[in-house]
Image 1 (spheres, rainbow over the protein chains, first blue to last red):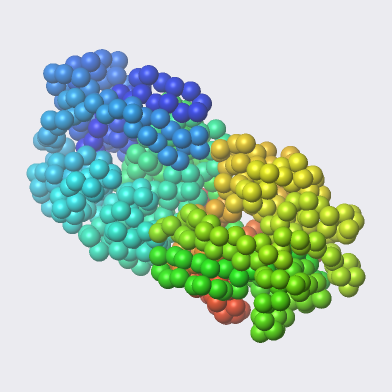
Image 2 (cartoon, chains in turn orange, red; image 1 turned 135 degrees about the vertical axis):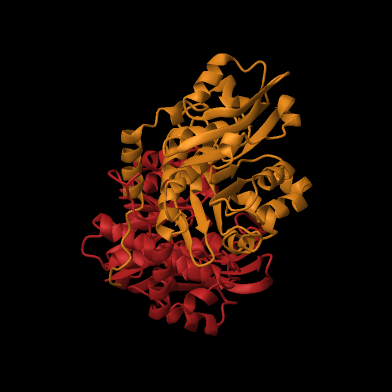
Length: 306
Length: 306
């Protein structure tokens, strides 16, 4: 089994209260691929510029098949942002789409049989194009989006969502998408748009997973030293879908909840260091140990007398 | 066993996106008493004005002993506030301390043997006075506070905290108190100020409990229709301390975690209706049923293969 991810590869400039990095590897597809690669094979569909050195290509190649990575004349997508002291809010200082502005994702023939697809946060028109080009019958289709597209391309987004199994989305975006300030009410409302499952990402507060029949909420792993939250949500999604890709019945509550646990675990590695530095170091031992920690954090009994 | 609570009884004017109430019974000690009364006997120490009608006194008397409720010439404390659409932020529109301005809590002799004491959010100088007047040797002392006191009476607050077993505090206040924007780092730092346990209340995101040896995090119950969050934190504390008051070993992790579950359950009733309306309707059957719901929400396994 394998998962095909369509998204961005970028250079990020990030400033947090801890430190500052001028140029580091980032982008939704980058974080997603590395996290997913810990569970399944990954096919990457993205575009970079001619400034994307061979060392970066080699780096990405360690985690995913790069037949879908296109190098175009021009510069790679660049994003610059600054985080608030509590790391819960960020300000975009600069966005240079560069080659990403004309990104028109082409799925290589060798990826077409791939049964799990994740459309990371890109223009919903492009997400729709990819879904049309792949045709129906995929086993599992995931999608992420952002406030920009809810603001300017709501119709395209709603159309794309009709063909999606699982939507991963930040809580503010979920509220906005469903025009419902209460997240617990917005989740079920969002399911009416098409997805069978909605995963609401709440940063340091954890995540909530909505199905038509049940809701599950998991705290985030309590990370004392958050260095750089960039990519945490994409790492979460990568682990989530990477694990589900390997499950015979990904729709089972148990599979979905396990995927939420692993998404939480992988996101916790990402935020501990700049860019992908924390994520790449998360080996099986570290992941098991962190899951133990999460288990202790969430170890409640609900059957006591009172 | 019984618990003595020292705090405010007030009339609140509350405006939320759902509706508006001009004058409803509120105050930290009110919510705390009603919630705690579901688990143990409660002694109330508070002050009201001559406008506090007999019907309100009779109402409070259903939940707690009122030997410590003093009626002073003047008006009862009044607070007016307006909540943001997502109910996560609130703006204070008016604060009229009235008789509360000169509140000097006196513990009736019949309460002095009471082994559990909760100092709800009042001036930390008064909290200190109460602790001095009661002397050492109490079985369990809890305290709550607010940003105002951190801003203007930090020294008094720090002094009071030295004599406290359990601090309950909102997350923003915890960050401010410890000058640490990361809640997971602020919790352990706060333990150094004196309390053995710190309970960080995060509103719709749930709560985190810190001991020197362990940390536990619990999501809030997912309430779809939040009508009025006023008093949720005090209801949480009431249930938390009310349950602990009845436990032989309140310091045991199991007891603390159960208390967190019940605090979460009781807070969920409070936010569903204006003022105390939701809280008073929470009978044993409803509490059991809601705990079941919370259990399903948090039902994760952490021992799967990956």
